[in-house]
Amino acid sequence: MRRLSSVDAQFLAVEDGRTHSHVCQLTILEGTTVDGTPVDGALIRDHIASRIENLPPFRWRVREVPFGLDYPVFVEDESFDPDSHIWEVALPAPGTPQQLAEAVGQIASRPLDRARPLWEVHLIHGVEGGQVAMLTKLHHSAIDGVSGIQLLSAIIEPTPHRRLREATDADVPRGGAGHDPSDLELLGRAVLSMPMQPVRMIKALPATLRHIDQLPTMRSLPGTGLLSGAADRAARIATRNRDGRTLERPAAAQAPKVSFGGKISPHRRFAYGSLSLPLIKAVKDANPGTTVNDVVVALSAGALRRRMTARGDDLDTALVALVPLSVRTKDSAQPNTYGNQISSLMVAIPTDESDVLARLKRAGEVMRSAKERHRAIPAQLLRDANHTVPPALFARTARVISMTTAAGWINPPFNVTISNVPGSASPLYCAGAPVVSQHPVNVLLDGVGLSLTLLSYGDRLDFGFTADRELVPDVWQLVPEMEAELHELADALGIDA
Image 1 (cartoon, rainbow, N blue to C red):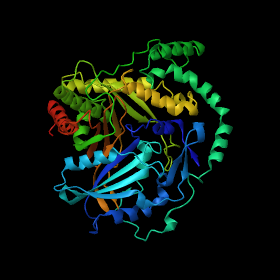
Image 2: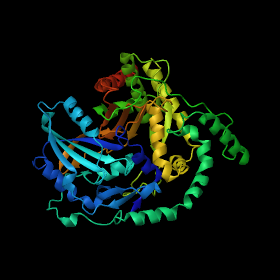
Image 3: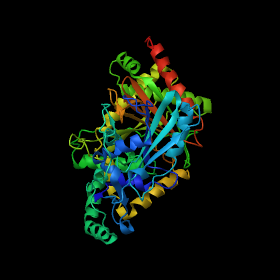
Image 4: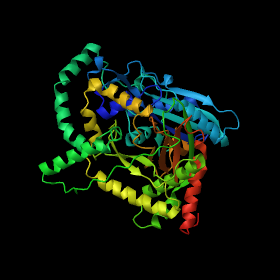
């Protein structure tokens, strides 16, 4: 069996019927393979079955430890059947992008079945232009952005050539996560690990207290600023300021109230589009010191400002965005290293700035400043912070924090998530069918009804807006606003779009 880390377990703990911790990717394919074979459910099923040995999490089922005395474990599903995870549907004519996005939102609204391995693949026919869409749905407890891309690379490949053979029982290997233990065995292992829990708590506590105001789940709790400041001063005195940190601790930006905040529903909306990556790089090159990610943040801020203006939101205070970061080392970046190794930046993005060039400049400044502050934060802060809560109380604590945010007793720590994931610069294929575009679908939390995720592919930056169905019924309007923001920025810089 494979014990989940505290960060992995958190994605299971926060699920409550409204919060879903699965992530999806919408991959739009040509309707036929390079040799003219139609793309259908049987083709995709055989393709996945022929590569199942390279998809370990596809065979893992989650088991809870009795009484919650330890984090859950993944075990090998002895009754694994790929057919129970692969679905085939069709859009009504004419199969517009809006209709496809509606179907994606509906599929993303349904939680994964914990009695089986936590993944699904939905093949969606009838897409405009004779294309076919494939929506992969994976639980965040098994993968983060980097490991998710690595996992999907087993079925989305840089070559159109396929291994054509009949799938057999031999395609379902045993091992990987290990056997399915009895409840008594799980309980015994948990009891044996309990003496180490206080050790982990004591070891993690100093760093957690010092940086508690940087934790997305805790920074909005009353008194965290005072607590982290006192812990920071104590640490600097004890170490004679060995890390060179200044006495000034910048105040954490407070997330303003917006119309797409509040208690989320179980239902999702989705919208997607693509931007020209060469144009984004031209904007970057026209501003020395600017990165592609800075341009992405500026574009996101501009598009959000346009939508906030239309919805009548207050524009005087900058939105706070959560920007996930990978903390994988060279060793942990190796293939087949799954789970979550993530940190994050919380950045006040310039939605309060009316000038498009000033937004770009400020985006670069706030991102550089956030990265500077982040260097002083331990890479495994999120993991260590979770260790300060005993596993037996872990799920309850996560739900209490979620409930208090949903009830409005504490303000959400951020307003929106913005994630930019590097993808492939070369053409990709799935079962021999060319990949047209790829659009990520992300997780939402109470108080945060909107998420923007981008994935580079070829000469484009494909993006997806994930939104709560009730809080953001107009999410599709963000697509042309994102495109308009890029063209306005290029025009202001004198770049031919």
